[in-house]
Amino acid sequence: MKMQLCAAPVPSNRSALEVRVAADDQLEWFDGLLAGHHYLGAGRPVGDYLRQIVLLDQPPVALLVWGPAC
Image: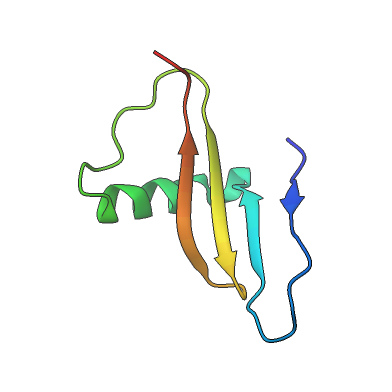
C-alpha cells in the first residue's frame, strides 16, 4: 500500500498536523496502543479497515480506524 499524506499549509505560529496511513511495520504498535488506551479495547477486526495515525509536530496524538459499514 502506498503511504499517503494529507497536509495543508499552516501559519508559522501554528503546529503542523499530519495524517498518515499506518505502515505494515506499525500495525502491531498501532493495535497495542488501541487495545491499551481505548475504553472499549481494540475490538475484533472484521473485514478490511484502514488505520491512520495523526501527528502534531511529529509525535502521534490520535489513532483513527475506519471500518466497513455493517
